[in-house]
Length: 112
Ligand SMILES: [Zn+2]
Image (tube, rainbow, N blue to C red; front, side):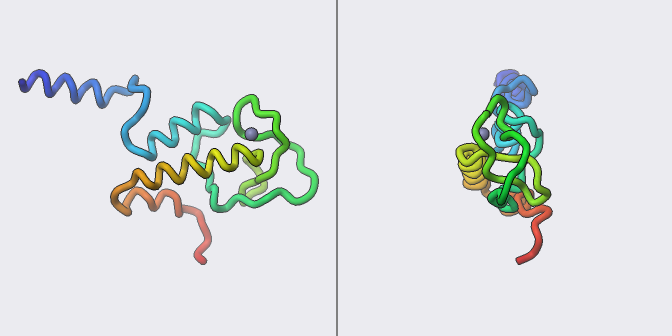
C-alpha cells in the first residue's frame, strides 16, 4: 500500500506530466505552447491599438490583424486571441482557491 502511494506521488510530480494540476502552471503551459511568449500577459493592461502598428499576434502562426497591445505597446494580440487569452486567465482564476496565488495577476498593475 505504501509503495503504491509513493509510486502515484512520483507520477504526479513528474515533469513529463502533460497537464500540470495547478491553474497557474496550467495557464503558463498553455501560453508557452501556443504563443511566442513564456509569461502570463497582463491582460488587464491591454489596450486597443489606435492607428497603424507593425507586428503580428503573439499566437504562433496567427495572421489575423493585430487589435490589442500591452501597456508597453508590445506583445500584440488579434481580436480573437485577445478573447482567448482573457478566457484562459479567467478560467485559471476560477480554479484558484486561496487569495495567495491570485496576487500574481495583480503584479505590475497601477493602483486604481
Ligand atoms: Zn491571433
